[in-house]
Each structure stands twice: as C-alpha cells, then as structure tokens.
Length: 105
Length: 124
Image 1 (cartoon, rainbow over the protein chains, first blue to last red):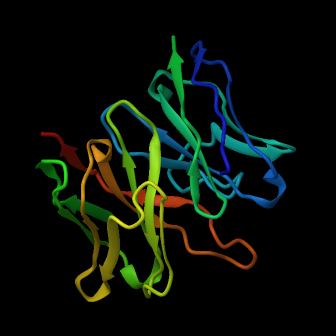
Image 2: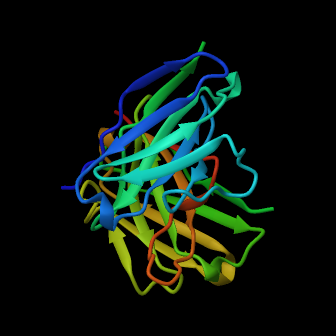
C-alpha cells in the first residue's frame, strides 16, 4: 500500500524557517495537502493542491512538491505555530503521513 | 460560517454497535463529498470512509471494511457512520470532514473543514 513518510519531530527557534518533508513514491501524479493540529483541537487545512493556501492562513505557510518529496515551509515561525503537522494525498484511497511534531523554542 | 458537528460517540463493549452523526450547516451539503477520519489517542490521522455528494461512490479503509457503513441524508444536512462489531482498536476520535470540490484534472484536493470530533471508546 502507498505510504507517506514524515520526520516524527522538528524543533526550530522563533523567527526561523521550519521545513517539514513528506516523502513517497510517484509524487508527480499526486497532489498534497497539509494539516495543522494543535493540542486538543481538530485539524486545520493550511495547504492544499501542493501550493495553495486557504483563506485565513498566514502567508508564512507555503508548500512545494518536487521529485519524491512534498514540503511544508513555515517562514518566520512563531510560538503559535507549535503543533502536529500531517501531509495527505490520494492513492486508491486517502493516505495521511504519520505526522511531524513541530516544537518552537 | 461552515460548521460540522459530530455526535453519537460513547463507551461501548467490544462487539457493540454505534451510529455516528454529523450535522452540517453554513453550506450546501449537496455540493460536497464527505468523509470520516479518525485519530486514536496520541496517534496520527487515519482515513475511515468517504461518500460522494449523491452517494454514488463510497469507499472504506481496509481496517473497517465490512464493519462500517457510511451514508448521508442531504435533506437533513447530515452524514452518518454506522459502526458494527466494534473492536478496542476502533477507539478514537472520529472527525467528519468536507472535501474540497474537484476542478478540471484534479479530482481530489484536500479537506477544508473539520468537525470537533466525537470520541468512541471500545473497552470491556
């Protein structure tokens, strides 16, 4: 079955850029979404269709996809960005990555 | 404002059944495919099931296939998940989520709205 692999954790300092990767096979034919989930809350869509940002999501959030890796980039990371981040795509059904815990310290 | 409100969770014994409901407001349910996604405590997101706007296509994760049935009643702005033969590994928060409509050559684009979730606990 198709799998998406994310690093389990990432730590950045406030103001730095956080880069979260999501790797899988045959990414060229797939579009990726990214979700932010803060502790005790429901997931929130932050990037869809690889690079598109929903209304209300800060411009600090951006996405890219190249080769076998999709990437979520958070520029000028703030303390309020601390959360779990999940990538997601479709194969024969919906697939989520295992999630990356972003710590801002 | 788009709202998805789940209900129907609870503590049940293994082998029991539950019916989860999701009431949608703030948008036309008939314009969207809908899905259920679950999250075991402390774990990641797992897709459970999806249904197209008119129920002509339905899909299930292998982990629940044969034990759950997804349905919808657009007239009642509602999505449902009937869960039978529940197992301890079904213990999770169950989220109702809305799929972004497809465009041109892009059939699937992500989930743009999520409910607050309803907790299903399966334990003896």
